[in-house]
Image 1 (cartoon, rainbow, N blue to C red):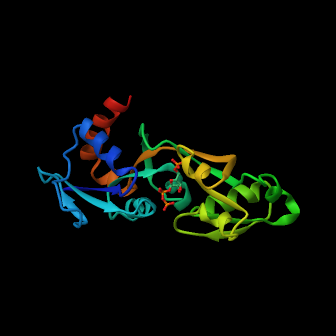
Image 2 (image 1 turned 180 degrees about the vertical axis):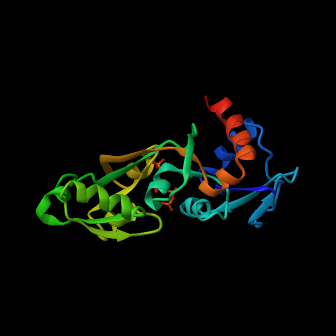
Length: 209
Ligand code: PRP
C-alpha cells in the first residue's frame, strides 16, 4: 500500500522537496498546483499538501503516515506523533516582540498586556510559567500588524531574518522556542508499515547525518 506523506505548503515546501529528493525518496509527479493528493512517479508514495499548522493533525490522525512540520507548529498542536529526526532547514525562532519605542513597558506585571499571536498555546504557556498575566489575541497571519493598529501591546511570532520585525518597528525581547523542520511519523503506521518507513528514514538519516 502506498504511504502517504504530508508536506507543508509555503515557506518549508521547497526545502522539504529538495531534501526528499537528495535522500532519494520518489517525488510527487508535477502538477498544476491545484491537486491536493499527488502520487509519486513510481506509485509508492502519495503526497498531501497541507497548511503547515495542519500537517501534525494529518499525521496524528493517520490521514498521513509521515509528515514534515516545523517544530513550532508541532508543539503548538501538541501532536502525539513519533519524531525520529530533525531536518536541517526551516531554522527560525518563536519570539516575543514589542514596539521599538516602548519595548519594556508591556512586560510589567500589572499591565496585563494584549498579545497577538498565531501560537496561542505556546504563548499562553510561556507567560503562565513566568507568572505574567496576558490577554491573548489569536490571529491567523500578519501578526506584526497588531501593535501598529493598537490591537496588541506585544506579539509572539516567528522570526527568521528579522526583516519583518524591523520593517514594522518591532524589536525582539525574548526567544520562546528555537525551531526547525522535523520529520514526523504516525505511531500506528510505524508499527504496521515498519519496514517501508524504516527504509525511508534510513535514506534520510544518511544525508542528514
Ligand atoms: C512569518 C512570520 C513573520 C515572518 C518572519 O510569516 O510570521 O511574519 O515570516 O520572517 P522574517 O524574520 O524573515 O521577516 P509568513 O511569511 O509565514 O506569513 P504570515 O505572517 O501571513 O503567517
